[in-house]
Length: 509
Image (tube, rainbow, N blue to C red; front, side):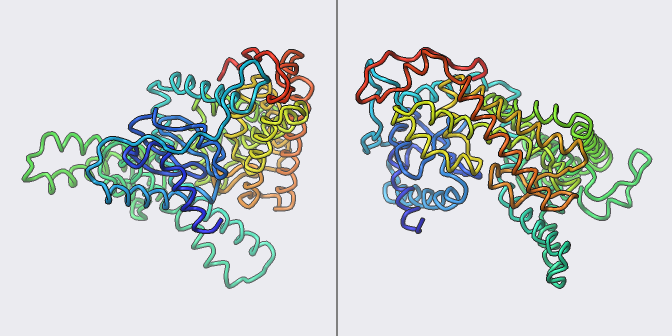
């Protein structure tokens, strides 16, 4: 997509989200443009979904437009520039503007077959209900934890791929002179990841980011090896990201306490000093040791689980991941993935969890085959499948399987089968994982790493994907529809009248 196409996409999105004065924040993750809105009612969902570059929308704590990996990183700066430019032109504008682009989606049919737009409306309703149920203190806290780690994902991916390339050079003996340079490039970020976690933690929880980073930097400072805590010498990096997270959280609390009590004339001197000193001492003589023990326990448990539980553990993890995503609980896994990457160089959990996306793709293909006359839904599936193969599952989840109900459950069955396949090989001693978090599906291939050789690792992961696709397809094809659902859904909405389908939404949505 040329640069003018990215700018055109950003320009098309802006009026559909209420214009520049309706925007309170702009950010992006691996696949989504995340927008804070003043007035949600000014967003034209149907017109947004009709844009060719938009793969779907997700409403959570921010309004999220799914653009796909790569595209989102190019469209977001253009979107930010357009918003900034519009505000400079009319800085006095106070009221958000309404979208002027007409909706491109057809209105719901009256008495006809179900269209993709109507299924999307059901998906939006399910998302709204899920958002209401997810607004609990625990789930809100998990989202904030995710906000700390999501900005680190691009660096994790880049360094992970370089580490994989370096491993290939080491194993083949090619370009030996390049190995030390690549090792330094791949390892530099991971050696200081605690600092970035501390910085983002302070930023997320209302502290000064650089103070959070300064406290976290103590954890990776080589000189901590001279310090004795609990009868043991500390090791640089002990406690890792969990220790950095805890230390930065403490620093935020100390800083806020100081801001309330220290006189303004002394604030610039006293508050930073006390924040770093108090949080740093607690980190050295408490948090590093405790977080180190917790991190070691996480790594030992993950290894034990897959070595002994094997296929059953993979079945459970792969089968439950889509419901975890729906409930917002998957965000609790982000620090665990990062901790495993710190310890072993890769997370063994991610390839198993990625099987949920394979089951979703297989289920969508089965829906496509079972509903040959529903042109609207088949068009949605065709447009969303390429992203699904690359691990971007939101368009298929919210546009197809979740609002249909049964296909969501059978997609989970496919994910369970793929997870069991990979878990079995872990139990047989062929352990492998991903050197970064974020990508899934086919996009995970460049990030795979293991101790049994890349050929075998890639073959097992590809086999897991194939099993997930096949079982997701078969389970959905034979068990994903009732006769009444087929009657209601398998028709051309523009030509064949039918009754509205019954509500078949899964209980976990």
